[in-house]
Image (tube, rainbow, N blue to C red; front, side):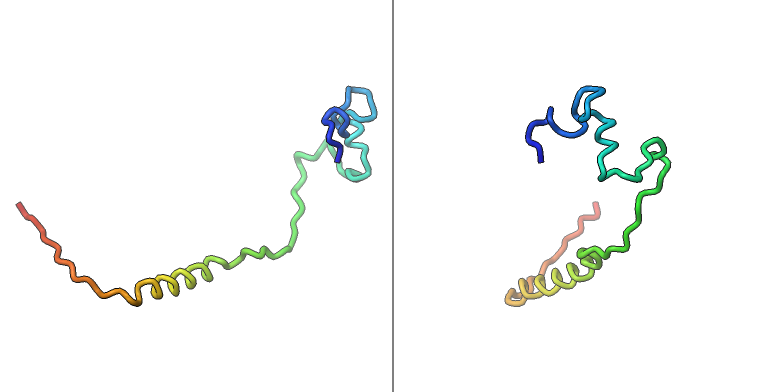
Length: 85
């Protein structure tokens, strides 16, 4: 990585080999149609997320830990008074 922002590819003066056209001509972007880029669909990847289905696991974990947290506590009786004035 080039630390100097002025020396980075795409940051040069217009007409230099490091301007925007130089960036588009870099081998990394070979085959990219910059004129129609805004019309293209993004690529689709069938990569499974490592975080899929964590909702169920998280709920089970919370329930297990909550039950352990209150296991040794005595049940408290509460009386709710309703004032119907």
